[in-house]
Image (cartoon, rainbow, N blue to C red; front, side, top):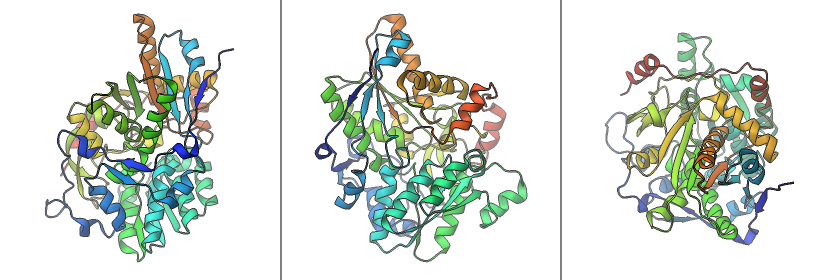
Amino acid sequence: MVERTKYILDEADMPTRWYNVIPDLPEPPPPPLHPGTREPVGPDDLAPLFPQALIAQEVTTERYVDIPEEVQDVYRLWRPSPLFRARRLEKALGTPARIYYKYEGVSPVGSHKPNTAVPQAFYNAAEGVTRLTTETGAGQWGSALAFACATFGLECEVWQVRASYDQKPYRKLMMETFGATVHPSPSTLTGSGRAILAADPDSTGSLGIAISEAVEQAAQAENTRYALGSVLNHVLLHQTIIGEEALKQFELAGDTPDVLVGCTGGGSNFGGLAFPFLREKLAGRMDPVIRAVEPAACPSLTRGKYAYDFGDTAGLTPLLKMHTLGHDFIPDPIHAGGLRYHGMSPLISHIHELGLIDAIAIGQEDCFAAGVRFARTEGIIPAPEPTHALAACIQEALRCKETGEEKVILTALCGHAHLDLPAYGAYLAGEMVDNNLSEAALEKSLAGLP
């Protein structure tokens, strides 16, 4: 029997610094703008939402940021995470390609999200904050922040997108087990939620709406701050521990990736894996193709407009220069709830505009087919989000089968699907449909850009 190969680092080999890609780019990304003045935002503009330590990381020009020892102690509960070579999948595909995946499902909540939730909770607690608010889609981010808040003694309040709140009840239970309070979004608890429900009482919600609700609550409450699970620079910074570990593990494997593939919603998983490899590419030490994969129902990189837009639906956040479908965009309730965001990380959007990465979109039926294939060969049921990257990996591996190329393919398996099995049930029962975004719907949502 063909066995998968595991590459494991010792605890002593866990990276002690996060990597900031901005100093290595040919040009810096455009700054966020104040929605009123249209001038670049300053630290004072962000202070109602974030602690000073995170604001400093958001704008830092340093190439590396030290990971606090208190954060490292929590990371060691599951880090370093393993790198696997998918030999059984390779055999099933009959491909000469070598497929590797960095598995983040070993974390306490089963995804990559604690990589940033833990430091965000730590920095807030260190500055005297007692409560954090946030949004979540499928629930991985909300679960991660609930775990992190329990670790550092903070209250946690979560607005979960209504479609996922209904589809994934066990995510809610996980968050509540860690001590969080969870609301379906849109809710009647905020002005922005009530406005949405007045216009559409049956709204299935979106990450943009949930962000509006969490930001509104944070801005109005004393000793409360807001935590974001993707999109912003400091979030992607924290996730680079994934790619830094993977680089060390590829040294153990004696291999170098030719193609790096990651799923993208807001961008934290993709950036976390890709940025350290992009550093090596820009330095001329390797030359992988770096590919972002997004859902066809929410294709911000492949069909969105690169423009300044709000990060939320109600227009409470600064204006971000990013690939966007429009902050009014309400995506179809696909099962990959973590990828249902109207915009893309400004940093990843900028890197895409520089031509340093490419992007494709795939429908959810093909993604779940890839997820089932992966589960039946590698023994891990992937979360709906990384099935997008797996589908692209399989496409690349089958091209290698046709051409005879022995490419090395790397992806981030950013979480497992133990709490997402109803989505697989829908696929296996033949009840899943692809929700491709129509041109009319796209034009309508883009018309509302500020």
